[in-house]
Amino acid sequence: MKLLDIYAKMRADLNKIEKELERSITSDHLLLSETSLHLLKAGGKRIRPVIVLLAGKFGDYRLDVLEKVAVPLELIHMASLVHDDVIDDASTRRGQLTVKSKWDNRIAMYTGDYIHAKALTIVTELSNPAIHQVLSKALVEMCIGEMEQIRDFFNTGQTVRNYLLRIRRKTALLIAISCQLGAMAAGAGEQIYNRLYRFGYNIGMAFQIRDDLLDICGTEKQIGKPPGSDIRQGNITLPVLLALREADKREELLTEIARLKSTNGEADSSRAIELIRNSEGIGEAERLASRYIDKAVHALSGLPDIPARKSLKDIAYFIGERSY
View 1 (cartoon, helix red, strand yellow):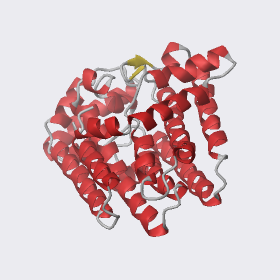
View 2 (cartoon, rainbow, N blue to C red):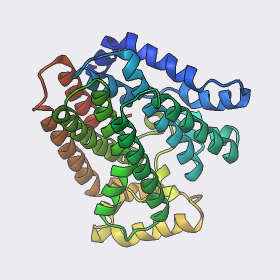
View 3 (cartoon, rainbow, N blue to C red):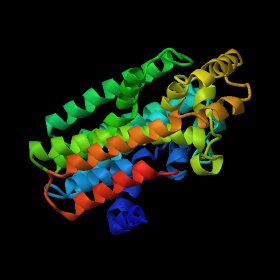
């Protein structure tokens, strides 16, 4: 309920962000508009724009400036989802057909490129070179993270450290710089935006671990796609890696993963999911996500005691406990 309260208090500004998101990707090219708006209309939690705006409260809060960070970062996230669905051969997202499923892979790839380019066009309206440096470095790291995920498809020999570094690049960085750049755009001091970066990094790590847990333990209604999508696509996530450490499950789970690989993910994954759900890895992954949330909350402790700090804390706890 607390998350809904935060959104309710920010409704006017978030409505403006939503309108700018739609306006920014609407094109004279009808097909491009239709494909670009498809994912936007499917909704989303808009966590990145929300934390950009909350981070901006620690400086000179001006929506006309902050939207030039909030909108691009959400568009970059959207573009990455369109591309991910092609790589993962995903047919649904948020309960809707993906762009690649409704149209085709080529249309989806160019749609993602277009949304990404629009994001970069908007952020160029900000003159602070430090903002562009932070964003460009993060984009490079995100691309490396995506390449590493593809490289490690069905790689059951990867370590937990490999996994954590990958999700840092794929997910946590974009959330971290959402906090950082929101504060930077508002003219907040270095100590403040560095603390906000650490907060964002830690909630980003927890966010992805929770996402990976939901993919195993959630229902299709909760997550908007069939559970077990990751393992069918070859994405070996933390719950899988931890389950593989258990001697009584390892051999059978390895056999199930090899079977999925041999059928390009077309084989039934229910036994693999059952093994992982019944492993100690679920509890271990949940505890690690909780530790990241604790670190995020600790990072907030040195910030000015304003309402935005409490809102960020509430968002952290929502991410740590989320079931969708």
